[in-house]
Amino acid sequence: MTVMYDRVALIGLGLIASSMFWAMKRGGIAGEVIGYARSSETRDVAREIGLCDRVCDSAAEACEGADLIVLCVPIGAMDAVSREIAGALKKGAVVTDVGSVKRAVIDVVGPHIPDGVHFVPGHPLAGTEQSGPRSGFAELFDNRWCVLTPEGADADATAKLRKYWEALGSNVDEMDADHHDLVLAVTSHTPHLIAYTMVGVADDLSRVTDTEVVKFSAAGFRDFTRIAASDPTMWRDVFLNNKDATLEILGRFTEELFALQRAIRQGDGEHLHDYFTRTRSIRRGIIEAGQDTDAPNFGRNPKP
Ligand SMILES: NC(=O)c1ccc[n+]([C@@H]2O[C@H](COP(=O)([O-])OP(=O)(O)OC[C@H]3O[C@@H](n4cnc5c(N)ncnc54)[C@H](O)[C@@H]3O)[C@@H](O)[C@H]2O)c1
Ligand SMILES: O=C(O)C(=O)C[C@]1(C(=O)O)C=C[C@@H](O)C=C1
Image 1: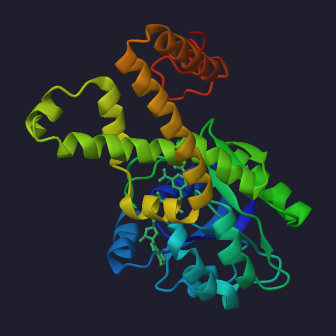
Image 2: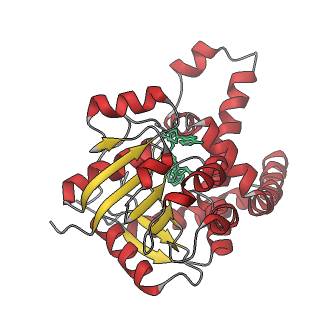
């Protein structure tokens, strides 16, 4: 139990901020945690459930005297909140964020950061389909990766933030922001879009009733429905702000899909079998690397 920052301010009090709060409490990582959310309902819930040591009615007030400020709002709100807090930041403070897209956040937050304050963007690769102040839990970041995209930020501030994420339970890596956005377009953003689409298709199909979809939903489709239940505001903002990378991956996805469609139409079993054999090895690689924390055998029997 080592206090790493005397005062931490959480701006936005949803899944990620509340998980961070409980993880900080678990590890005794912060002296005091101050919170702010835009809606009074969220602030009331936070006060009711003891989320944060103090909840303020303005973002600027929450940041006064804070050593670490974590922006935990949807990407589309990053500009507004950083504008609001700029005047309240103390010299030497570190501002970070948890946004799922990095270049767009750097572009809108960076210009508001005053001299003497360090901005070190970040992104925990951990989440669920839940949102809001009641949805967080201390274990969310355990054994997950957190990517920092410091781009020339102060080395000491970056090193300390790295240690902070490790204390929250994460493994930490550093990356260029554009590369982060491309990697995440492959591993997170496009898969979400595909899940949203598949569930939309099931919903639109008049020959299969909603009751049948619910009753006969097989495991693969159920996984899609979990993903497609993710927060609409957050995901709208992800796609609007990681446009180029998502469109590039979506283009490649469509080409592959057409090739598979042709193989099915032509009865080309060899193509299908070869393709599925190749993709199976990706899954095995993830399990062998101990990365599948959702697998029923996680932590017990990491070998397939
Ligand atoms: N949910 C995930 O799986 C996940 C994972 C990693 C990173 N992220 C990123 O973390 C950030 C937060 O996501 P979340 O899942 O915690 O969302 P959430 O919807 O659970 O919480 C967002 C919070 O921000 C508040 N908010 C919205 N607009 C605001 C504004 N203008 N000013 C102040 N507060 C505002 C909301 O009231 C809410 O308290 C997003 O940028 C998202 O991309 C999410
Ligand atoms: O597990 C989930 O529900 C998630 O979608 C989490 C997930 C992802 O893995 O794609 C979603 C968005 C993030 O920015 C990071 C993590």
